[in-house]
Length: 267
Image (cartoon, rainbow, N blue to C red):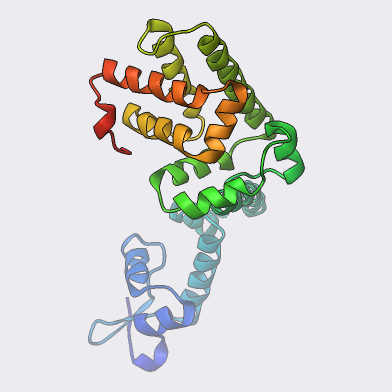
């Protein structure tokens, strides 16, 4: 490699600044023989000529469109390489990547909306799915109360990917459970009986559509079903006294699994 003065070419630092690539990358390309400087100063410093700079420009362009270094080498050094074919193939890959990123962006938008709104359903859809007694303000109220909890995050993640048809299936499962609870109360099913315990477990399974529900958390919900006016009105509207009866079967099921309902916490 011939010696030269600094005036004969550009230093690594100058090329790095001009092309917007790191000095480390330039050294690496030199080491693997992809873009070696043609000159060196008497002191041993690399200097890039105009031809070297042109090759580097092409490397930067090909790298930015996604070519790997081996593919760049082939395009630059193999006179038989189908450059146009390689560019077209890369364009197809870029289009596919753009499509994936657009779908990812749409998914992120839905996730953000779900964290903020809870339900990604119009008011009309909510009423059609959950019934005329549904209050579309409830999701916003729930976010205000529980928006900083793990359970709200879990609920939002499920909601973000859920279709109206899936919400309808959940609403149907909840309605079926409510009917089963009312029928069991009519039949004088005793808290702690196998049938009552199965209903308590069925409630946990149905509720898992919103977020995972431990038995201790279920006990806390049972307390809320009985004490909260909105929940109590819902259950007592199915059968008079159902809210308290439901709380008792949840408590009895918890005891059967070694949990003291009086000390249960939301965990």
